[in-house]
Amino acid sequence: MDERRTGRKLARIAEGIQSRQSRESDRRYTQIANSDQFISAQFFREVKSEYDHVEALKRAWLERHDGMSLDQVLPGTEFVNEGGACYLVKTVQRASLRIISRPIAKEYLLSDLKLLHGIRGATEIALKRSGYTSIDTLIEHARFGAQARRFIEIVDALDTAEIIEWIGKRFSKSHLLALHASAFHAPDELLFVDIETLGLYLSPIIVIGLAKLVDEAFTVYQYVLRNLKEEPAALTAFFSHIDERSALVTFNGRIFDVPYLEQRLAYYQIQGDLQRPHFDVLHFARRRWRGTIPDCRLATLQEYLLGTSEGDIPSAFVPEFYETYLQTQNVGPLLAIVEHNRKDLVALARIFSKVCEG
Image (cartoon, rainbow, N blue to C red):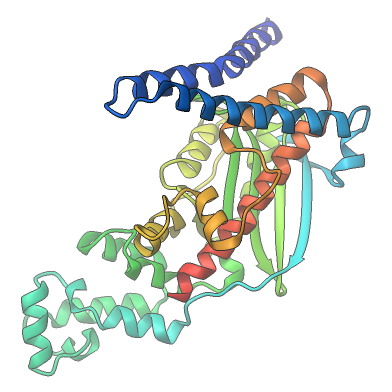
């Protein structure tokens, strides 16, 4: 009975995936048709061109890998844990990760008197004119001394979570001050995370990718679902990389990746704490490059800052590629998804480095 219910559920998911692109096209068409800038022929050509391009990519992946096994085209190992089994793909490449130096970060944080409650622009100007040039010069101040001492204690303790929380109360957790808190983590404590999903609410995660700097090499770990039953193993494996000093680096992860992971953990009743220091590069990128490039989507940042990524599949088509893999058992579309995820992780790290350069 459970297997029949599972089969029916997966069938519904498959049907949803198959109709996803047409529903999205209909929504976009209706939205633009009702606007003052509607140009039907142009919009149709753009949608058709994108779809034709992706379909051509998919056919190429299918033809190139017809009859091949997963381990032939994607060297990896079966990873087994208490959650079951999944497929682990591990790649290593030489890379540098630029982060803000701790002395610079500490000086930058302590120089902003507005981090203390009761100090705004005019008050800060007046205090600095009186010789209070940084928070550490306020430790004996009658009004602000207690706050100053507490904030310095948090900074000296390298308590990144508390620093970000403090900044969030005065500004926002996406403020550049929060980015400087990343300096209080060693490079190998920064975990770059990106997931690929079936794209539907409450649907499975199909690839969990994470990367970190290990011995001056950028190591990418990708936990891949060969079938949907392998999701618990991938979730459990992901948490084996997290310890008390880990900090997450994502792109729009506050809105998407982390809540999605938390929901899937709850679904399987797997214990895992993702409430830890989190640096969402999307928000820092917006502050840095808004107005200088068309938008701050990851694909756009890759194009303008890192160079184009030829042959990559758009994120919106990942569910369709995975469904094709499930239907045909041709590993080509799955390989395309894994490559897409790996490129996004490497791009995330490189963009984070550029943000940290200032």
